[in-house]
Image 1 (spheres, rainbow, N blue to C red):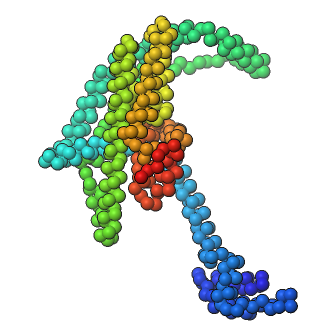
Image 2 (cartoon, one colour):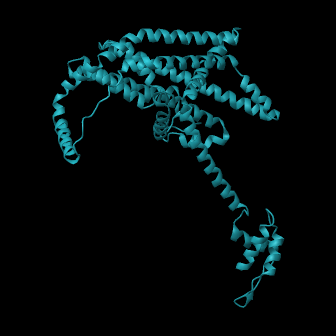
Image 3 (tube, rainbow, N blue to C red):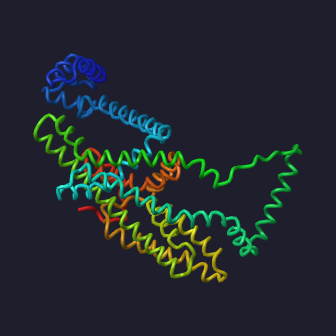
Length: 415
């Protein structure tokens, strides 16, 4: 019987498929007595059924399995290569991603201008000028408070350290004991020359031309993306072979663009509300530079989980350095914690919906990835990029499985 299966395998390698009649002929050629009886298939179907039990339902199953493994391996290698390329080309990709996200955010407004007979190029120019005016006004309003806070930061940390002096005793004793052990285990070293590090203000001044160049590139990209409109979509439709394919391409592209624009507009409005609520709460509690902390809270809120945590720590330090009473000092971070809790547990699920809820583990891994690749800019862009990627997966049939894997199991299923 083993010789029969071996012969069938040899017949199968002659072509991609094997007929049941060939299996029956091969079976008859290699039939031998077994236990006093001759094993012989009655019909070609019986012989083919025996062969199927041996090699499986699909004769090409082994080849298909190997092909799937090879495809997955190639995808993993391509993912690693693309990740390393994102790290190497961050000076190019960061302005490009910012330009794409801002153009998606402002595209509905430019479309509204176009409906009232304003040319798209002029509407795009107006939006870019509004962005420039807003950035300049924000920098001029917040530069002085930010510079004053950075200048007083050493004194602020020193005052916090003095207030928490009773907690320093055990920590200082443990540090001294560790230092003594290190001195006993390490040989004596010569004189150590400490190189003076540049101050934070000097570092910011040195990075200003580079930052201004990136801002200029982002603004130019936003203008070109907004003014081009649906040019790329039209080229994509022209490249589609048939009318049905053209309709599918247009529907998917429109759906993705509208969903991404809607999400970016919604999340920007929510973060603006967080900024205004935080600034108002800080002003009511008498915290200096309340507008600065509100803007910081709104910007950092684009980074899920990490951003609100950093804002909470910063406001805790501000409260401890500003108010002598511990209760009043802790009220500052508590107020922001209440605002973040209402936004995260009530407003965002209602406004954005459960359909875009993402597993927190995936969010943390995504933040770590883009933070390692692009630093603080990557952390701020990680949230919108992850949401846009899930929207893309939801609209493309071939990627809907990834969208299901990314979903939060605590969320309600999408309709």
